[in-house]
Length: 172
Image (cartoon, rainbow, N blue to C red; front, side):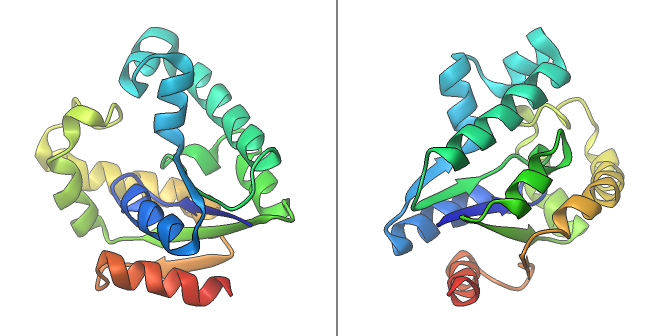
C-alpha cells in the first residue's frame, strides 16, 4: 500500500508522514525533498530558474514514478501537487494508493506559514497581512482536488500523534 498525504502547505504532511511511516513500517518520502535531490536544486531555485510549469511537470512525473515502483510507502505531496496535470486522477484510480487529505483552518495555516515564508516560494514575497487572504483563495481553488481524497481529516484540534492514530484507524 502507498499512503499519499495531501493538503495545503504547512498542514503537517511531512511531520505526520514520517511518524505514520515509522508506525506502519513503511518508507517515507517527502516529494519536495525527493525532487530537490533529483534536480540538485531547492524548490525555490527550480521555481526561479525554470518556472512553475517545469516544476509541476517534474512533480507529476515523480509521483507517477514513485507510485509505480514502490510499495509500503508514505508519500507527502507538495500542496499544489494534486492540482496539476492528471495527478489526482492518477492517484485516485491507482489500485495500491490510499489518499489522505489533511485539512487545517486558514487561521492555523497562516500562523504556521508566516514563520516559514523564506522556505515557501509561493508566499515568500507576501506581507504577513496578505497571507490569510492568499491561503483562502488557494484553498478555494484547490478544494476540488483535496476533496477527492479517500480519507479527509480535520486536524485543527488534533496533535501529531492523534492525527497519525486517526489516519491509521481509517486505513485498515
